[in-house]
Length: 408
Image (cartoon, rainbow, N blue to C red; front, side, top):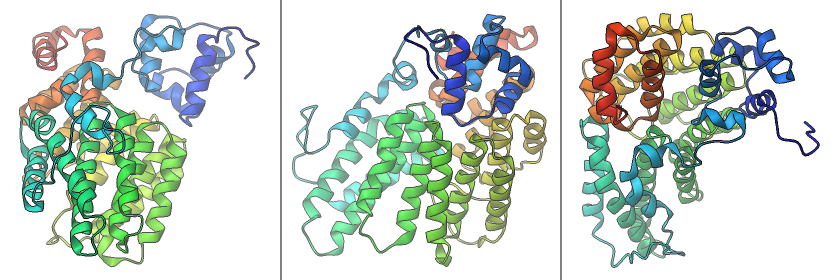
């Protein structure tokens, strides 16, 4: 698109962003609650965004943290994670302080015993999956675990024993856990970095399941960054390599689901539905007695949650509500799974303008884990949307949630 050196118009910025995300004009218009012709006129400069509300809505649809970016003068270039979770600084330093740089001056010292690192990592996983103060625990303990695992792997890389492999597993799991946390607070770029590093750790491994797990994390990170086609292709390539491995069914299903997200992101509704159907069949075929993986999320409930989210991405909000009504979480569902379900449906109801249902869903998420209200970036976006509408019937409850989130 030639601009002859002039500043881009709002419509041109919208079109560039839309194409960058791989979204069709029809999908974006539906998500914005407008007609495709309305959006075409906006992009062509034949009409202007008619309200501040329309500007904010378009920014939400295009996954922009700062609506003023569409006007050409964003108010801030700082990431969402820096604004809502400054306690992540120690983890950020631990991730970026590569042994070849030591940019933050932390000397590794001798590596601790592997069993101590494993025990500390286990505590971090247990906190993330089931503790109401899981963000506080992870931001306190995971940086130490990450540095220790990295130091341990460096010390064992020249050995021929299984200790080098075990140290690599510890480091990869630490990175995967960090990716979950960083994704929730909206630091998608750093989440991609920690997702990609285990790929190198397992590059020479003869264990396809470990490679596939890392591929799932990378594909999910690509999807969050807006590389939807790349997400789909990367996940499908990994799934094809994993198909002959019978023991990797849950990872295969997770790859099918994340590929479905990618397909939805490029507007391929048929391909996305086919992948969801395949994932549902994979979930139905899982051994109910087999232990669930914690480094990859997959199962019947995960397919159901994905169906809600994918329907939203395709602009089918009524389908999203229908899928949400059909979800039944098991009594044994982890805090992590409950929070993701409630925050997802709160997002859907917020888009539909059903503020009461959105607030009720957020209250349930808050009961499960108040820190998700405080730090989850999707929750913040939903709360800000509800706050702008200021529905009088849920004003008191919304104020309470905004206070917990630090937005009051």
